[in-house]
Every structure is written in C-alpha cells, then in structure tokens.
Length: 188
Image (cartoon, rainbow, N blue to C red):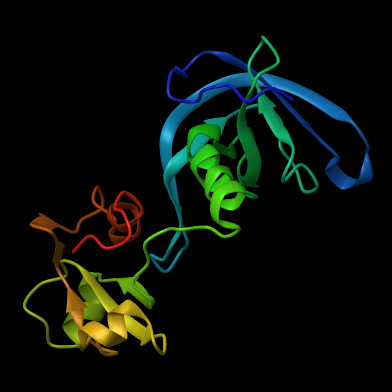
C-alpha cells in the first residue's frame, strides 16, 4: 500500500478502514475524519497516546488494530489503533506522518530513536493535590522512575511534581508526553 500524508487531513474528509474485526476477515468500513491531533487519556489522567491520532467514525472494532485507514485515493493515512468502547463511532488511527519517522528509524538504525524521560506519572487533580498538601493541582506527579533512564540520571524521584517543560506550563492542553515526543534525542 502506498503511504499518503496525514498532515493535510481535514474534518469531514472521507476515509476507509480495513481490518479483521471479531474475526471477520477483510472488513471494509467507511466514514469521515472527525478530528485530527487527538490524544487519548485513561480515567486516571495517564496519557495513553499523544496528539498524533486521527479520530474517525469509520467503524473500527476489536481486530481492526493495525489495519490501514485510507483516503479515497487508496493512500494509507493512518493505522487503526483504538476505540472508545462505551461510545459509538469513535475510532482512532495513528497518523501516518508520525509512523513514517518511526519506519525510517527502523530502516536506518534497526531501532526506534525517540526521546524519553523514563518515568511513569499521573496528572494532578484537586483531590490528589489536597491529599499531598500541594498549593495547586497544576502539573503531574512522578509515580515511578525507571532504572538507568534519563530521568534517574537527572535526579528525578518518585513523588516529584513536574509543573512545566521548557517554559510551557503543563495543563489539559499541554501534555508532558506530547511535549517530549516533539523533541529530538539530546534536547534538554
């Protein structure tokens, strides 16, 4: 399949999802791009996927993951990856432009070269901030630091609160994971 470009996708544009939902081989569904640049967060505030997701109402069900999301010219614009199980018509695909970078790393280096901190964290909320006796609920709290990670080498510890990254305050609109994903290895 020919890889297309996801940067030009617009809400309302028609797309086609192909996959094997629930064991039904070679299923094709159609829908529109509902939005681009989406992130997925869990109920406890953990970022599951950063803002490179395409939201679509093309039917994506269990078994479609890994299948292509195509534009009407047959170009792959995304990789079907997730649904909101309690909603109807809310599927998500990883934007192909971010996949191209990963593929190029695999071809060139035999591995993926992405920056990482090496922490697990949870977004702060009023209840958590109050229980920790913090002045406000802005930022994230480090819940674990991986051994030999950049975070450990920099001195981050479990319980630390991160309020901003490179001068950007963390908020519902500014995700730590998303900001790190925009960086290059070696950036500070």
